[in-house]
Length: 303
Image 1 (tube, rainbow, N blue to C red):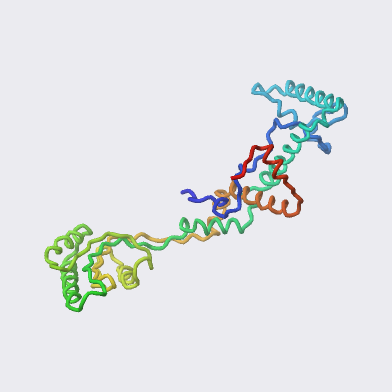
Image 2: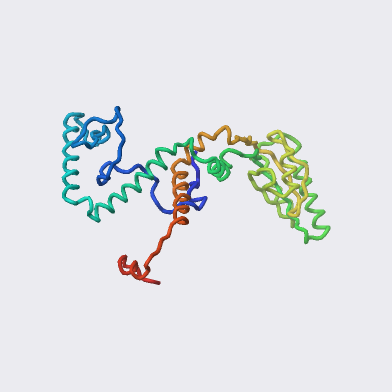
């Protein structure tokens, strides 16, 4: 069972961006302000802390922790050397740092700190309603009906003859128990006897209220498979309805499936919440775009 439409797209809140993810391990070195943690700190290089996570990045498939530590120390020494030579002020590095910081914020606030249990209930309720047919389904009737067609514009004599044919259908269908196939065959056979009255044989499934009221009421009054209704007049003519089967309905409340819904919408919910956050950031910020310069720099041309 899958949700046919994702929460993010259906709500119209998410832009075309990837699912929030933690920053990749190989992003540029970002200036760190890390408090010492006895469980995380493994070394100091010229006073700078080296954490277990720094070493884990270099841990190869051989699992050699000592080699990984040496590589982490070498990387820190090179980073310190780069800072000493002024490379920390390089514009390209600064831009890479800002991208890494943005990804780190997404990874922290919209992945690490946003498990399924933290999804706002409004999104859970919205997803449940969007996919309500998965959890709430009415009882459905499988039906065969034979219709003696007689629209409202037909005269009284035509209606009398149509009703007579429909009554004959009902009498023969009620004379003995019939299978659905036998009931359909009865309608086909009586077409030859109907004269100007057209008989229509149709198999359909219907939930309450999906057909005209008189037809729906008669269909759902049948409770035994194989039962046949009395002749039912509608604006289409005169129906005889055969109950072929019953599909039970079910009503599963949100409380019973909330954890399942949360798991299903986790990625979409993260995108939605990130987009909502970005909308608020833009409202609080001043963003000016030089359209001419942007067009030249990005090769954009007006239509």
